[in-house]
Length: 238
Image 1 (cartoon, one colour):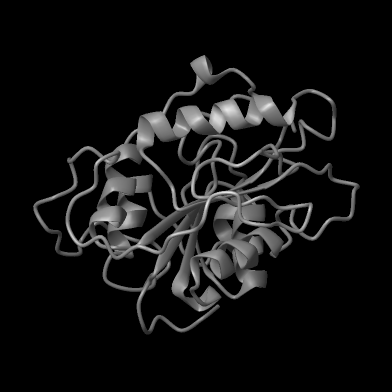
Image 2 (cartoon, one colour):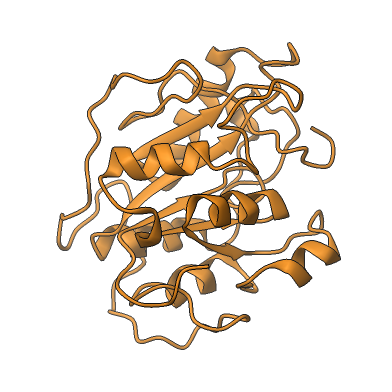
């Protein structure tokens, strides 16, 4: 893991189980429910000029349980509820497809960092299972695990950084990479954090990604949700 020096320029979130409730193979925007603290956590990063993105496995596409259009609609709903993300990176492949983008492989994280024009060591990946942390490690980024009921004890034990909830994880990295194994909500904050994330104020310094940017055929990225790929991870049921 990288030494905790420098600054954090981007935070990449897992989608299901981290930003929104984990509904297996969800293709229905009406079933999207943000997790507690997600809206405020993402807003804090925007207000600090830190880029925000989503890196999500979506093997439901490969399994024939979802279409790319289904995933696109779900991602759009996430943005309606949490505000716009600077980059979306999605893997539509199944566990046996041998792609380089599907977590725990690092392809999506490296791709997102490149689109945001930041170095991997300036990126924090926040997720709820071990494959999120392993992908961050392989990419050279920092990983913060926010456990949920599906997180295995061995994944918690192996994680380099653990936070009790999403808002604590974000607050802990506002002034730099994570420090210590168990992160605490002890860093000073500006008064902001409850503003509408869809209309962020403050320093508009965050990186931008041109909509419709070219991709490698496996990972799609865009300023708004591009044609997707779905969230799997050998994620318990997926």
